[in-house]
Length: 200
Image 1: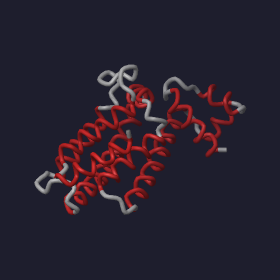
Image 2: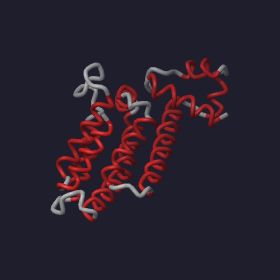
Image 3: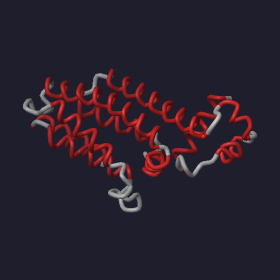
Image 4: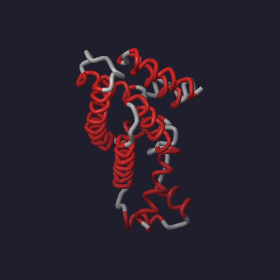
């Protein structure tokens, strides 16, 4: 039952927002009593924390699997983007915004975990790209990895990128292209253009 609750809560939180969904909503949707939920999660905060950790672990494992594929570093970044978007339901920015606003401690913990995971992943991607000739040799790997993380965090800002003006998928795709055009060698640009052409 605990796993079922976790999956249902994850689905509802990502669709409607962490603040918007109540324990009553989850109980009603599952056809169970609220008391049953509280047997497994004593507070909504505890449930929100469990959901964010579950999501983080699921996505981290998926990214690790993608990184084991024999893809070039540009293909790898696009595969990771598509995987994350799929698991975060197109990454509607509203749930992330609500998490940051109403559950700041949980958001801060998640943000730190993301930085550690993503920083390591991006550094490996950049290093591989330089070794394979897709990225320019002179780029500062540590600095670029932080630029990339900072940008990925900023594009979730609903004030800067209003969902009614910019779809999340459009913002993500354009940000990834922006990142790659700044670091790619001629070989990398050729590969990037090929991928972008195939996606249109």
